[in-house]
Image 1 (cartoon, rainbow, N blue to C red):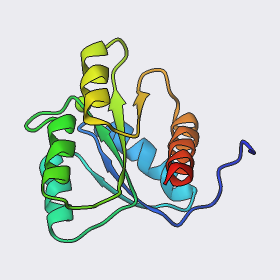
Image 2 (image 1 turned 90 degrees about the vertical axis):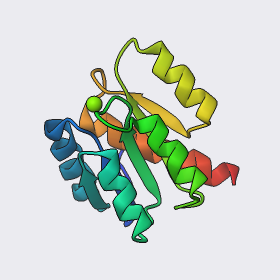
Image 3 (image 1 turned 120 degrees about the horizontal axis):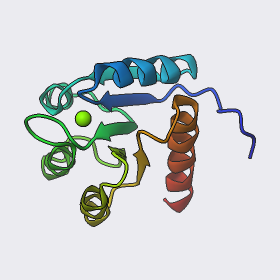
Image 4 (image 1 turned 120 degrees about the vertical axis):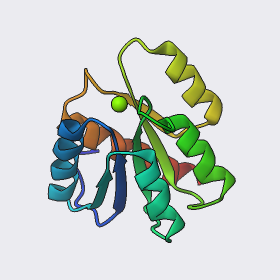
Amino acid sequence: MSDQPILSNKKILLIDDDKFLLDMYAVKFSKAGYEVKAVDSTDGGLKLMRQGYAPQVMLVDIVMPGMDGLDFVNTVRKENLVPNIVVIMLTNQGSSDDVSRATKLGVDGYIVKATTIPSEVLNEVERIINSKQKSN
Ligand SMILES: [Mg+2]
């Protein structure tokens, strides 16, 4: 596999209360050809999905005010809002509790924020999407 991301037309939903990171990831994924929606709260994400927005992949921060990222994923699944969506969590370094909760939920992958630069986030997301497609 090449290191260059394949130009994608996939829809991606980004959810993070850190607006700086949110903007940075939004720019990165847009430049790679993704159709990006970025919201700074789980409420915003739920609202979009309940209105019928159906992205192929979502990148969700765990630690957020209000409903956290893992409860958000749980809700999306319970309401069956977007079946087969690829779920990738954004975690903070050293937060093993978050990782074990994410593992229990059976998410498709997680990315440690502080140690991962945006181009690596893009590559990792594409790797996870591709590996999920192969396993389906
Ligand atoms: Mg956060």
